[in-house]
Each structure stands twice: as C-alpha cells, then as structure tokens.
Image (cartoon, rainbow, N blue to C red; front, side, top):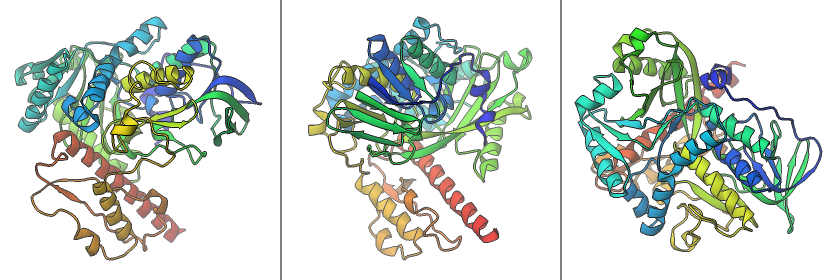
Length: 517
C-alpha cells in the first residue's frame, strides 16, 4: 500500500524544506536517518553549537516515525522486573528511570519548539481483553508502583467508561503518557534542528560508511560527508550494506485504519478523556482518536501485503466489536509500518568506532525511547566518545552482560539470537530447503507446549531455496514456566509469527509471478 494513504502524511501540520546533498561537506557530526532518533540527535548537537549534517534516504519521518500509533508511552514494553532480570538490577533501574521520564522530554520539546502535532497528555490505557489480561496488567501495576510510576489500575466499570466500550475487562492508566500526531512531531524536531543550524538532506542515502583513522566518511550519490562523529539512526528502515554494522532485529509489521471524522453523536462516548489505547490480546490491537475525531485502529500485520485483505477484515471486525455503533463506517486511510523487534525487546546501542554510535530495536516503543536515545547519543559523541548522562552512561554492560543486552559493543559482529532462536532458524532453513526437518525437530522441547516461540526466517535465502511453492513453516514451542511463558513474550511471538507468515506469502507471490510470467 502506498504511503499516500497514510493519514499522518495527510494531516501533519508541520513541514520542512530540504535539498539533496550536492557536493562534499565537512562537519562535526553526521547523522544517518531522519526519524525521532536522528532528528533529536541533530537538534541536541546543533543547539550545543556543533555543525551537523543529517542524511535521510527518503523524506523526514518516512519510516516508523511517520507510521506509528502516536502513543507517547513511558518506559519499554517489558515490565520493570523483567528488564532488571535481563540486564541487571542497577542498569535496569537506571534504564527504567530514564525512559520513565521520556514523555517529559517529548512534551518538553513540543512546548519549547512550538511543534504543532496535536499533543494531548491525558495518559494512556493498557486494556485487558479478558480475565487473564486483567491479571497481566495487575502485575504490571504492582511492578510499576514499586518504581514510583503514577499508574492507576481501573476495574471493568471504570475501564469501560473511559473507553466507551463494553469489550474491556479493566485497564492500567499511566498519567505520564499521551498522544501526538507522530509524523508532525518528527517534522517539528527536524524543523527545530534546521533552525538551530543543522543541515538536513533528504533523498540522500548513505552508500558507504567508513572511518579512515581520523574521521568518518559517508558517501552518498551526491557527495561525501566528512565528520568527527557519526550516529546511525536507521532502526527498522536500514538500507543495504554500507560497511557499518547492520542493525539486527526481527521486522514486525503493524497496520492501521482510520475512519472519517466521526459526528458528535457517535464520538461523544468514545475515549472522552482523550487517552490512547492498546490491549493485552495475543495479536495486540491499538485504538485512539485524532484531533479531527477520526477513530484509528491498529493491529499486527501488513495490509499492504498480498494477503492484506485478511488483516483489513480483521481490523474492521475488531472496530465493530469494540464500538458496534461504528460498524460499517467508511475507513478512509490505511497504512503499514515496520517495528524493529529485538529478541529480548530491549534496544541495542552499538559502538561503531571512534565517536560512532548506532541504536536500534525499540520494539514498538519508538517515540519516547527514540527521542531519549537520540539526545543521549548526541551528548555522548560530542563528549569525545565518553559516556554521557542517562541511558548510555554504564559502559560495564559490555563486560558484564551477554551479547544482545543494552550495551556498548566494540565488536563489528552482529547481535546473535539466543540458542532457542538459532534452533528455530535452523528449522526454517532446513524446511525451506526442502530437506528433512526431523533431526532438527528432535532437538526442540516438545512437552507441556503452551505457546509459540520465535522462528527466524533466513531473509538472505528467501525465494531462492523454495522448491516450487512447497514450503514448511515450523513453530517451535517452549515449556511452561520458562521466561518466555509470559503475556508480553506471547504477544511478541504472535507478532513474529505474523511477520514470518507475511514473508512466506511474499515468496509464494514471487514464485507464482515467475511461474506465470
């Protein structure tokens, strides 16, 4: 589906004028990527007097920053205790505290730079879709309260009144959070960076990145940029092999549909408080209103795909289930975007070289963390590569945490998935190769199966090793009581399953096109 049908592109009040890079430039900092991370980094550095050149392969906010739901959430998707268990108590507590303040940073930047992005700070509602979901958010409530977060657990009556829907069983309200027009916020950050002196170049993709021992050299079709420091902020929309480490993540597709502006009679009881919402369902759903009164509903899956009609039909059914009065409402807009999901749902910070950093893997929480990491990386590289205040401060992660945790890594080696994920990938590679999967399957846990675990598809071989259109998709299972037997993990597994099925459908379509051409 074309991005021309993306509501956020149509309704963004902010705009910016840039040029393609033409000729060579020298600067203090080169930023690759024009999303939240890149624009906030460029703004931070330019405000400190650094000369900045930002390169964007498409237009500002083209990727996830211009396609997401627009929920400015505090923290990560994971519950606090899981974060601390995965990266350690002290660094976990620092990360939780820092990203708990992320909405303050976002709304502070909006106010400081007068960004016109429909900013509404009335909190968000994490809705329970059934009794099990209510137990999940009650546990999250307990953990968040222990960190000092201003969260409130709502019973079914209160949650239904807030949502205007009888299909929720309770909700967790987080007063720190809010909603924005996501693309307008990104454009506003870019406009502010430009006003502070940063040079922004759209349609100027980085073709190669290298460090010559003295400075970074980034080659584009229009010229070279030479800089003392570099930030790679491409996240889920990284293009090609530039010579720098490629972000390692599982791409998860998320789609949204938007109604026409609802008349007052229909709109009156729907989210009267202006909160943004998502739920605890295995296939996670989101819903919110924009300033014009459109109801925007989203779910995992790609409506731009060959099988996108199935996702669209699901979203229409979900909308009618939540709000029966909206059944049959015209849906004027529909769009999809990629989420960069890491195996542990925690962002990764990689040291690319001298004063060179890359962050990726926000796992569905891009607005607050993306802004925060951009600011922190800019401060770090401007400090000569020494760690700065906040989330990049603790360099001991590289020594004390296994690969894949939030860390600084000196190695150019890509992030490696866990042993379980590697086994899942073996299954897929064997299956799409038309070989016998039994030797690999015999290694998988097979008792007390309770949920699907992630299986990674080998994208490099996609479409090349599939015999005809025959293929096999293997779902590995994990035992009950394991770390992966948690609601947030089950939802992630469902997301990854959606992504892999989409890739398989891509292969089928490609093979059919070859057959019929």
